[in-house]
Length: 357
Image (cartoon, rainbow, N blue to C red; front, side):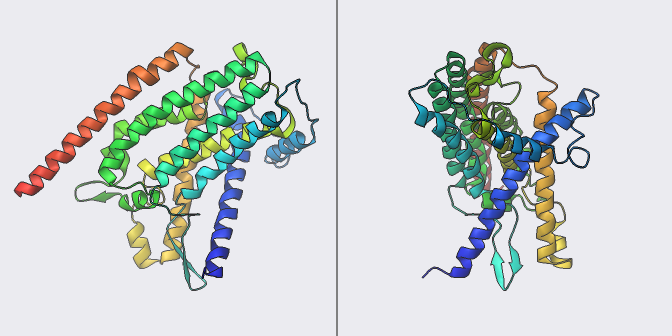
């Protein structure tokens, strides 16, 4: 029989993760405008609420209250399904992320993760690959040539960079020996162990660099935002969308940016681990140390979100041929070379261990 307390615990975790994802996506729009204003020596939104803090709520209310518009399309059902798929897949990826270690509350050890499956990384890639259908369906069902061109660009770009992203993960998996994000986080406990850094970015810097570049492409962020470049395609795949259907596409982009920043932090920067965490557990208490771990994880996430925005307002977008050349001719060969180097290092280590060196 399923424990009712376990069901309540998981329900609360799921609701909290959903709320955090939505809040982070909502306030990322505000932060984007503030970062852009700072880099361009402007003020940014400063009217709604306390210095502009309620601007995202005003934008959301505006999107909800705007008139629904349907283009002259024979695929009205698919026109509605497109943004729904994009938003759903953006939210589903957060289910396998470990947001922290366990908290001991109400006599129970509560796992700060919606579900801990041993193929979490495979699940992440599977859900991300489904997200392209939301963009492709929306662009095709809009019955607009510019929307269709934007959707084709986005689909080919995301499929191309998924290959390099997947290959970059193989080298990391060869070292960690697991697909579980929880286990990968636990292996990076602390910061220094046995004469070397525990965070994976130090042992797999090339994997991190390739993954970071591919994350920009997967989230359609500058300099890879050719799917919605205004100078060529008006608004890209969501040109014909209005009201909250367009809001779903916009929210999905920022939710994907938040999740990708989280995955980067978990895979390469220790996740919720921080230097001195074990000392905190022993001297301050498990709950305090693990709550601080959650704060540390979100600090890492906020840094990478800022990095996304910094790049957007610093680097111009690529031409489409440059984008494809980078993906197929540079990143994929680099990923394969990295796999071979990692395999050679692991083999050398195993041989040395077998010979007693």
